[in-house]
Length: 205
Ligand code: MN
Image 1 (cartoon, protein in one colour):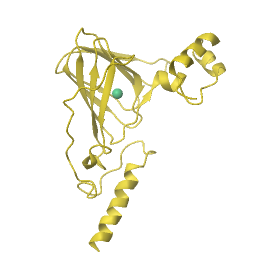
Image 2: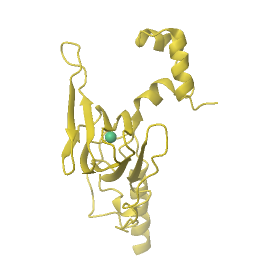
Image 3: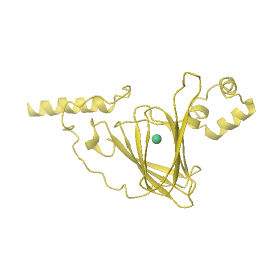
């Protein structure tokens, strides 16, 4: 009987783990997921590799590497920035992000959804060590290290599976690529420039 209960609980936990269609995490039915109750993950003191073209790296802690988070509707990330490193404009379709600067000076911003007048309002701030900023769920946002030294921040995210849509990659690097006709008209760009951008971001074969 105990085994059956554990099995059912495990199946329930797994079902929640793979439920990607929810806009927000479901409410808990138990204190924690009995099948995955390890509440420890080490190593978030280690910087991510920022030796890439954006000069940034993210270490995400979610139920895949901290099993005890499963079903709790929350996750955390360490964000590392080389000098002038950028985390490109992106959205988290399933989470609000609370961003805390631990080291450095970071220019951040988010853009509202379409307003009644057809516009989109930009909110920005220069953050210093100890400052906290919130990026509302689903809105496009970015973080840029504007200092000469590496920067570090930690983010709490209101989902165990926040998801990321990196705008340049999603728009110009999808697999297969979005039609050049669509992108040149949408962005009011020359076809050649669209093809150039696609060559920069394409990851498909
Ligand atoms: Mn983010």
